[in-house]
Image (cartoon, rainbow, N blue to C red; front, side):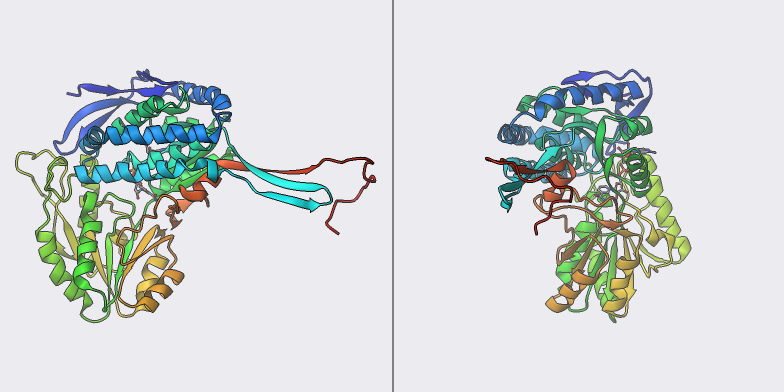
Length: 500
Ligand code: NAD
């Protein structure tokens, strides 16, 4: 029986939902419902937007340095509450505690970036662009903006979005995943405590009804989405049709290319962590390893097998566990369906993680590590995202053939190459048709002051998350051309002014 009920956080207060439509929030380690969340009605989302619109007028007037101070205070509060937040996150998501801390920490790095907002918002100035004419530009906030986030990073991804947006002078409506709403609600409380006035950050829990309200409401100027590709595409096309600025990040299928000269022990170490960490539920996971050249796949598998054998799957609060359960029973079924599909398509199932059961936690949503060999480009289980602890080995005779695999895949989020050859790595990074590249780095999530974003069906719209791209996404530029004439007025002219 659920003991806890999550509602919304609107205008600086927790409000109970009124829709009567509930979604379960599980503790995936135990396989039990730990809470219920009320899914917002259109009217509730409209209230959140109205609260954000009312708060925005004053928030935009708060000078950037004071807005930065709120971010500094928020960072300190999140750090002071790190243990409790990580526990809550790990309990609802299923990722192990150390990984939950990493989720929060990577979000905080964007908050640190947002603390530099006074510098980031400085415009440009040209003195003497013409006789007595100066030109300057400024970045102004958009107004009310919104974020829709996935279950797999319930701290980091909301902070990617609201950290930058709010620092820029916007107010925010966040619709987090209904699967793990605890941490986003807590972050909103901490923003209030840090000094963000009521209405600056609102959280509505919900489903399509809430999303559609945000996508069509005239007061929402821009919307940032992260989730699966079909929904990202829907969000992009619906939002842009309603005149909004949209960035919508989607799914992924990241390849790790292993050249024959790579340090194989290091590569295996990296690939195992990136393929199975967080039970594979990361958009920057590495679920495909491409072994290049004769014998590389065999050498790789020889090392992978003991590493996989040594993995410890446990409840999310077990400090010795390498990874925990997946988020829901339905997601476990989906992953197991893909494993069966791989078998039916003719890939060789080397390690089968189905049917894994943890003693004392038999109802938990666990899947053991799974390894496929001889995976081929035409297989559906390769073409689609599995999002579970499944590693697929492919073989390529040449580097050329290996580069083609990630380049031609429908997703283009991240890719990694393992090699000791600098020239090969450099050429690979230049040519591969993917947005984020790691060279001997298995999870190349860019640091907060660079930007995050994939290509092809991994992202719709052209502005990346955070970094200066994030500032550009959440602001509009205004350019002023000024003249302060003295004495006689210049001659009247009917032609466009030029710099002749
Ligand atoms: P999801 O697409 O199911 O949900 C994402 C958000 O959309 C949630 O807030 C959800 O409530 C909402 N939503 C769900 N169904 C909807 C519908 N029919 N209409 C409108 N909104 C709807 O994704 P998820 O399962 O929460 O997260 C996993 C996915 O997110 C994976 O595909 C993963 O690759 C992707 N992801 C991508 C990135 C990236 O930056 N590219 C980062 C993290 C996760």
